[in-house]
Length: 185
Image 1: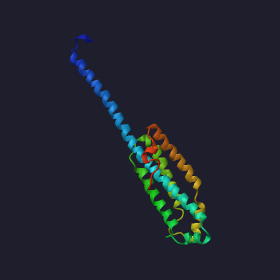
Image 2: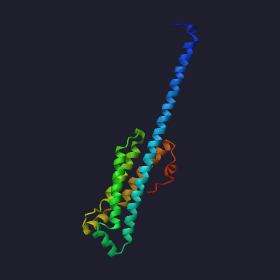
Image 3: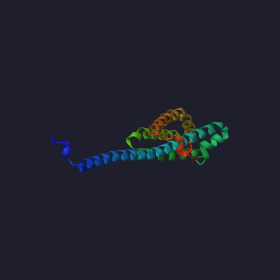
């Protein structure tokens, strides 16, 4: 083993500089990775708000339909161009888009559970809203409305929401700061 006292000072300075640069590079890469992950998490949170808005729209349509008198309800069932039928069609269209985005979005592995749970929630909202098809006959519309399971929507969304909240907590992202507490569509 060589005598350490015979190694020139410039070698020690160079070795120290290399170690310092390596440590700085490690922390810089880590900081950039966390920053990018937070940016991707903001995208996931915005999709959560979209799914929540679609879920609320579906719930509002169902509640509105429950308040209709028989004549108005029959108009809904017989006419695909009714406002409520169009609203359900729009909910299906939007949630299908969100589910596809979440399934194909490039995300860090740590965000996959939140994105998968949200995609599942979007799929369920789409499936429930899609029960009433545009071309359905009145009897099929009545049966489809009776088959809409709002409790299922709540359950699947709570799972997705908890996954997103967990990711936000892990990366210290204040969800309310993303859109001031909600996405306004």
